[in-house]
Image (cartoon, rainbow, N blue to C red):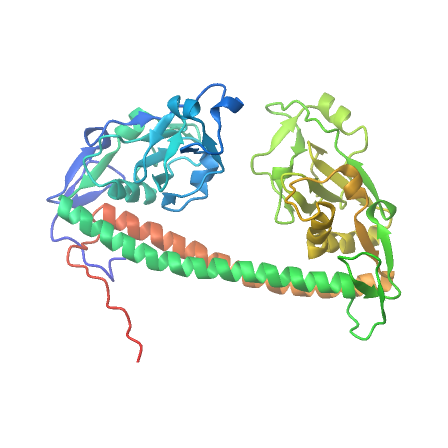
Length: 446
């Protein structure tokens, strides 16, 4: 960073570990002296329908909405009624707030009228530009080491208000904001290109899988009508069956066992099935008594397929070895009658066939769930065992290639995000002097 940007002529000790030395002419001041720090509020009980209205003036902001946003909160799936918003904290477009729960320390600026609950704090009387304090938090250093209990970071109005920040003149602050808007904008554009590449790779990967599991590897194979409109023609010697005729389809108990702190048994929920893997992020556990009840229909077999039929429908992963687990709500387990068929069925469910089936049973409407009988009756293809082996072998190679390309793109994104954060941190702590910075002229086309 220092090689590209110059430092200020003189520095002084800020007396604050995260700031280190700051330019001599900067003030070091606690946030509470720049603005009071206030907490959001929620109408209670929050699930009461009278507090919500699709036509409401103010959006209801969740931690997930902020986690998914970049700089500005632009959308939120729910809106509050006039009553609901009167019991919360209303923010107008352009106001700054900060998460103190969930994704702790994530700053956000409102791009819409929004209400915030007590998982956020805001700054109603801020004496410096909102965007500058946004960047201070976006640098991810200001709140680190504050309010920690064990390994859990705990922020509240007092800890946030007590954070010391470096403040130059308003003119210099505006220059820092302009610099960061421009430079982070360039980085963000590069990140978007890598994200677009990942999306394209995923799309191409699914197309390759879809072709292999519905048409086979022999381009000269004789074809027949599958009898399923959305499936079209398939190799003549392949069988068309229902899922229930190829596998034991085990549904969950349609209720969730009691979660137990320190429990031994992992309760697999739909949120734990992501990107073809069983994720332990946010894992919840139960005790042996509940485990016995919730596995009366059988303990999920290692190597069999977990399937989500809601929220969203159609996510799959293989049951791993060495994990004591049972199924929570909206989970299903497919145990193929022939173990050799499992890999093929797994790839079939990854193809666009499942999306087309869901569209066919929903008659074009948007659905987020499948009924048990709809899952049992998913049309599937059964190639000869020798072809299954060939298809899976080729798909392993192809998926490995796509995985390598995706990993490279993800690594590039990670590096750019690290550079973005480092650049922000350097600017708001005075490690680089951008007072004379001007945006480079745009390249002129000849």
